[in-house]
Image 1 (cartoon, rainbow, N blue to C red):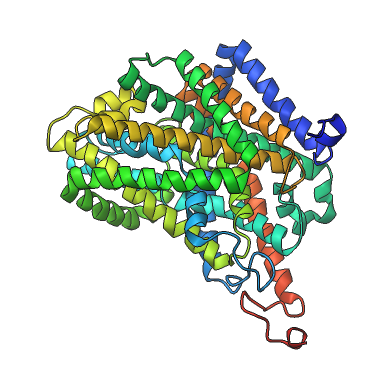
Image 2 (cartoon, helix red, strand yellow):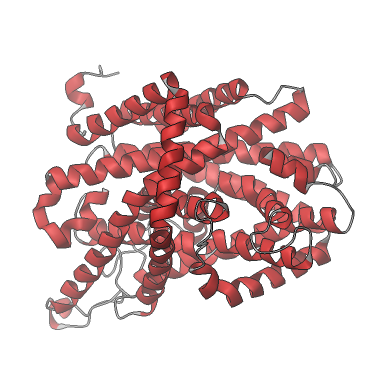
Length: 519
């Protein structure tokens, strides 16, 4: 076994980005851990200020990303392939869709699958609680927050990075999407700052999911083993599963993430099918169809709905939190999806990322959220109030009222644990690649550092206030990240147009039929 030296460890490292990102993370953990009240107050103040001053911008930007994504899918650029014109996909379609879905949603979908519909039913923004209109708004806003907008946000960086890396040979790092605008200056201070911002964004985005997962896992252990649900226990859970996730990081992308993602697809799918069959199947079907109709009907209005009376109230707690969270996640999902999308066309990426995960998310909410709403409305089970008080119990509390509750709760807890591992694994790989200058095989000791850093940041967010601290952090970091996405959109259009102006630039994913190809 070769000895690990500092020279070998830093041979693939981008020192400015790695040490700059590490310094920010260490400073955040120390400040948040030592001055908890002050740090929590700062994040709360940032959230309030951003909600008041930039709420309109968040809504406009997220909707703009969706419009831009749809345009890309139907534009003349849609047949451009990520790589050479004859490049074939690296991963099969099922494995590809599974990995991007698990990376993009994961723990959050399990955490909010019951909690969000019930919360909106009891506390709707524009209706009386527990009414027919409250039920409509429950479906409307749940589907809205987990629909097309998140994946349009993810698509910007995913498509840009895949294009510039596989087709233009640039590093698989966020700085590369700026190349059409600043050229080789991406290798200077602007590029370093961009990668540092995205590394920190990935850490906070993934840490938010890990914190949610730890809270739910704790509730599962409480039911099975009587372990109390406390912040201290959640910190132990984070530390324990982070250690397991680190082993997955060391295994690597093909061996770790793919196997775990595929295993979790079967587990989560089995749990989903079980609840669909033994639950209120008719109510679930009606929930899906009605929710889809309400979502499509109200999408334009909901996308730009701004609460002028209380911009830091319901809208900041829900919509702005989600948009900030998705934007913070975008470097993580973007780099990871780009890494596994070699050989895909622009249209394939647009269709897959917008329609497949969105439909799956709606089906998930219809089954789990619909079951919980049926228990609340048709059977008189008081779930909503309990879920509002403790959102982490939502899945377990719902499964308690179905047959084989012990088995299904165990499976649900296992699904969360695996999502925890795959999220940490994928996030660590992404941070490692970015801080290694986009190197596809970064050093393993560096991967271990980022896996541990994600666990540390998740722990600090729990100490700072749990779910509230996570919401505040997401909204705060999402603002500068959104500016990068806007700039990346402009750069992507410029790059596509420049390619079409080149000789043979109208060639697509099919084999070129011009003279040079014939030769």
